[in-house]
View (cartoon, rainbow, N blue to C red):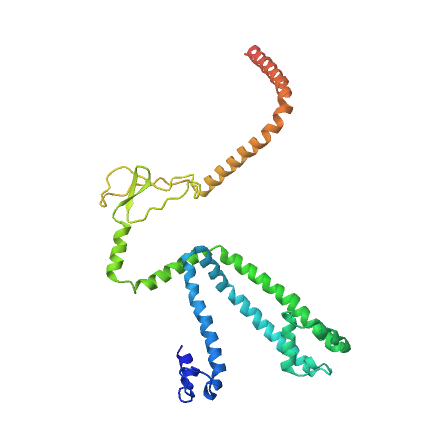
Length: 310
């Protein structure tokens, strides 16, 4: 803003306004008009970047903005590699003996190679490359290197970086919101802050459930029962005195990891038996009846032999 004020054309035209108030049409104003417009464009971009702080009002938008900033490093690496290949091939093509005017010097060659990467090179210019076989080979090698290899590498890098950041982006968004809140609290008046804390009613006890009174110092938020399903009560309750001087009761230690693995194996075996049992019930029903009679006869015969031996 200070730079814009120094380059303001109206101020430069104050001594040569030709009788018009607040005019920018003068020789001094025209000399600084381009610089002023360039600084104005940069200031406008910075203004909209400041508006990105409003994304904290939505956790989803804030998480998306954080992901964009974290994958920006991958984009910078791609641009660095692209600049290297553009400079290398531009110098190589300028050293090549060829009569194509689009690649007559290093700046023109670099500009046209960059246009090829972003698909801005016209088709008629490609047709003129057929007259220069050596130049055509260099262009083909450049396109394979940058368009086919580097652009696909950029997509793979962005994909991997997004997957790595996506797992924690919600936590990062909440941390970013907390940071902005802490930075804003310094400008909040003390009286307004006291009224806000009083409205929270932090001294009142919170209900874990209907009739289940919990601890104070929090804010109760209701949610659907299906939002966070828990099969085990996370609140541990112990009978006795609630005095802080009382000894904390001993907690029952759970089994070691081997016992847990054994329980998991037994549960899996039971599940497999339940899955295979309906398929074999119909086929083995008649066989089970016959084998049952046979086994009972065998048991009675073995019992009589045992009695005779005694």
